[in-house]
Image 1 (spheres, helix red, strand yellow):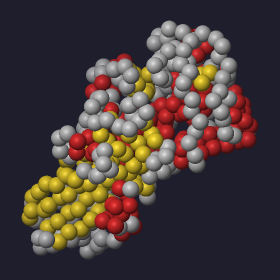
Image 2 (image 1 turned 60 degrees about the vertical axis):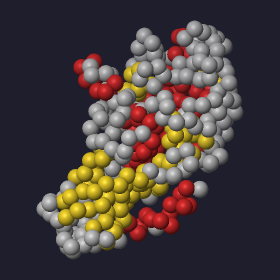
Image 3 (image 1 turned 90 degrees about the vertical axis):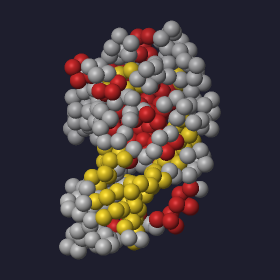
Image 4 (image 1 turned 45 degrees about the vertical axis):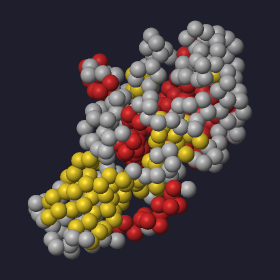
Length: 395
């Protein structure tokens, strides 16, 4: 596997921290990724601030700190390897170091599409599991701590760095979850094509021909599948073969509004919820999810709209609803479970994972019943019943 080949090159994560401390050092380099995400609020719809259909984080394609990125800095033939800092006041920066021959002069910078965040590896490889390497020269005047903005290079390398940027922000926000191994390629080995999380090799596949590498919500959605797998310790049962039951409730496979077995609605709805939790503030009064199909549509996690109404299953889909659900309704139910303040304390993000973990193993069409059992185990049956009925998932 790529990570096994990569570790001997860079050493364990702790080794990156062994550089001179502030008392000895004279400079630290900081790095930002000049990202492109077509579903960022102000890129998707310039009116999003005015009409309120905005997520809270990364609204524009401004440069974002390169959290945990693996960087080699060389001067006068002497090299040092860093995992850039995640927080502590210097996100995206090296620890302080003494360059060979003093601060001023030419440096060779080598950025890899790999990072260490929350003590977990995140690797954005290509179809052959190879990391991208972006090498360039940089002249430092010899005063201050420079901030260097990079894009990777055009094409495949840019795609890997763009996915990595969104993935590192996702991993930095939530300590829970596995290491992440991406395949960022023109096409991916997912069944039926598209983007997916493969349970066996534990690999996330992101296509580039359809622009998926430009979609921060989709990237976080696929990471959500990995987090659920990590929480359960096994692949979740998710039967998405049922998708019929009304003009506004059908899809060739599965979609946010399609009527599905509730195992599919839960697993996909959780991934939507996870992406919404990444790009919205947990304490915010609203929540917006940008749905990539079709055309980066803003969807409220809180309020119903004409095209994305509350209780989609019950208001738009033909009965019977027993054992069925929609991803939209489940996304909103999980968001409400996280946010519902009564009784205190409200569950946070980890509280949603606790609920999933407590639920006995579900089958194709009994996911809500097993989640209800999990709520009983946690003493959260009242809260779970309230959000289930509010969003119409109690079937």
